Length: 316
Image 1 (cartoon, rainbow, N blue to C red):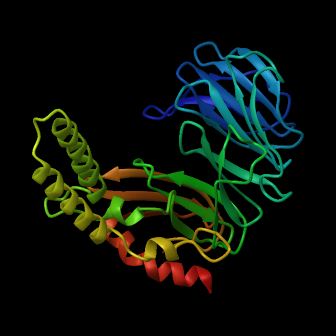
Image 2: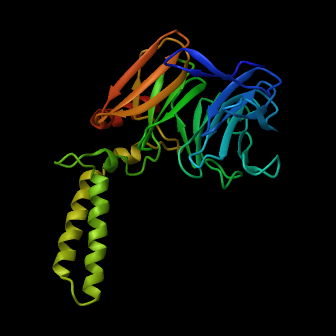
């Protein structure tokens, strides 16, 4: 019950230990001036970073807490558990049930949910023992997932979102790491580059905004209709360049999203993933039960090259 500590990594010294849990701790995360931990008995505890004292507790789950993720707002927390649920609650709103924001039951088809990851203000990714990753809108907890990502052949144990939010990675018990488009629609336009290195999606947004401004001036009797036509033609040309039927093929006939790229290097369960941008490239690091850590580096062009190939592999 005392297996949560804060460390100074540079000096290798323990700065603080935390009290309040009544059973072994299996998940934790850090806020601005507090820590959150989840234990074997389903309890979540908030501790003060400076003093280590327990601030408050919540009995959130009926089983072991497998992950805790703090939202960017600093007060909404998503937890997952062996009880098959994803629970979101507000740490500033008191005790349960008054602080409950969302309770997604049966998030992994009756099996363990291994991790949840924030992918938007009101959206979460979850992964678990049903071999599937799902994206949820926490405002509509009784609705089906917004998207289901299928392709792994074993339990999905870890997730990581790219810094730009376009892609995410998943690691599974079969040692595989796969990359996915969070929102498959228009992925090509977000990854395809212009001649000067910019993204087609950014240029399209800029041109459409400029066209709206010119249209407004035309309505005021000051703009040139010919400029509107020129901008429209340029936008349509870019949209044709960016659009590819691979955008549609990435979603199979059953509505499941397929992976865009597979990364190999491990021989046992991939239990942790972390992602960062590095000088125009993506950098993904993975840790597995084979006692190895793999570092993958790839760019948007390599993702695009694997776009169709990996889609076909995942559908076989």
